[in-house]
Length: 119
Length: 106
Image (tube, rainbow over all chains, first blue to last red; front, side, top):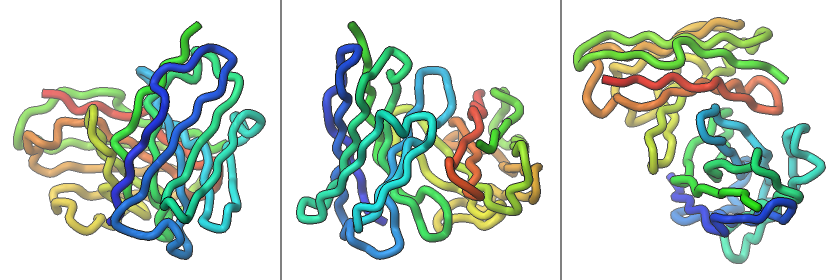
């Protein structure tokens, strides 16, 4: 199993862009068939899938966030990234990166990073 | 989007108890249902996938069942390390969606 670690700013101002990176270790991000996802959990609420990116760069985002989300992948650094624009307080959450298994489940997860949006 | 509804939202239990958590999908998802355990400050982990398949390394006291719209996670003989939050997730169609979580407390 690979290990994942999120990093990025823990405090973002309202209307600005949230940026996070997930470093993958113990395996190559280029492994065929796997997708790399971002998931978040607002305080007191359930988990919400944000989207995924394949090593090819192909992406798929959840419709509710599609207009504000961008994901990228850097195979040379074995990491992938999330950008969420025009944030509001509703985007305050613990953000997780995770590996999507070809057995249709999230296999490895990062520990999560809290991002707070405040004016 | 497929809505996933878990019940109960929380429960109190003791070590050794048998615990059952249910998850209902807003439409049929065949057996594309996964269960996760998560604890504060730790990486969530998958327990059960495709409704009833135990992930390698997960204790056999965890089991899953169901198909279509109704699913169950059972913990037979609750252990101290099992006090956590459990979430179901459908992998039938994107956007993949989760239940709101069930917290198992002492």
